[in-house]
Image 1 (cartoon, rainbow, N blue to C red):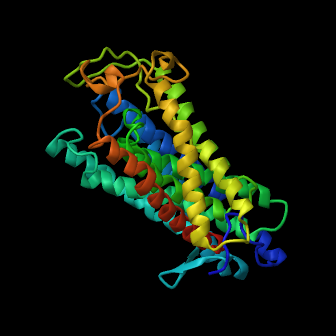
Image 2 (cartoon, rainbow, N blue to C red):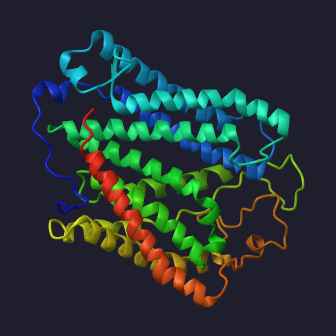
Image 3 (tube, rainbow, N blue to C red):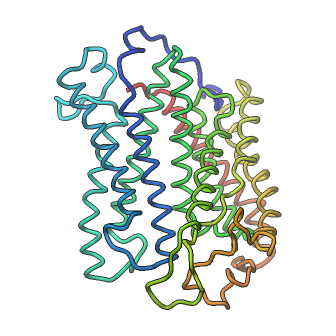
Length: 396
């Protein structure tokens, strides 16, 4: 296999007409939609851990569905304009659907995601009326909603990378930033989906690092490989950090109290999610290693280097940082570790600020950290490099 790097290869030559063909207003709408959805999702999680009771029309739900509708309508308009009023160049840079309609691949994914989200809304309302409030996190309507949200955000990523790959003029830097931002939003989704295993109480267990190695090398190495930025993985991790920490600072500013029992904690303000993981440091390592090995190794060796780099740097900063997060020194507005879900009793490990003992033994933890986690990280990075190579070729 041809040697692979995270940095993108030089794009194919394109004509002046191709460079000016597709106006990116639908990309702005898709990025707004994905941002509104992820903010609504974090807000909704905070709503459940603070208030408990909800309805279809909570502000968090409105933010999520608003994002889906804006992205879907804008991409639908892009499809209609390209189909009925587009030039031959615009149609050539589009994907045909139903043998008649033309639109960017990412736009089609946004449209599908919007339909999935809207379909889940009445289904979710019926589910709650029939079975109660959030009987299961991944209930059928929630699963449909999650797929729709990811569809919109992944669609925004595809629109951005296609425009970046086709562009060779002054607009390229704009598309680079949009692509990195869309990638950062996807990393936020990934962290939320894996949050059950990324709890700070698990930060001294092997399961925490094994799950992190499944998720983050895939997204950081994959999305970064198609980028034309100098520090792509670092930029993507920075977007994740900014969004997560901003929501952690903003949500506690709003007063709220539980409305669903049992209530064990005295909660007066919105409870945020945990402080963001220190992904920027291993992301810097990924970018540095990728440049150092550029053109010298095949993808499997590159994946091994990236995976081990991620695990070593991530464990080196997150393990000691976990001690700090479990200490009283982190109980302030900046790190906000003193905000607890109202349903946690004072006897819980989270409230007592002790690490969960989930490994069978010290030797099992050592095996997980030194053997299993590195293998997982390598495979995840390799899958990311394959995915990134595909993204690098997206032009429609």
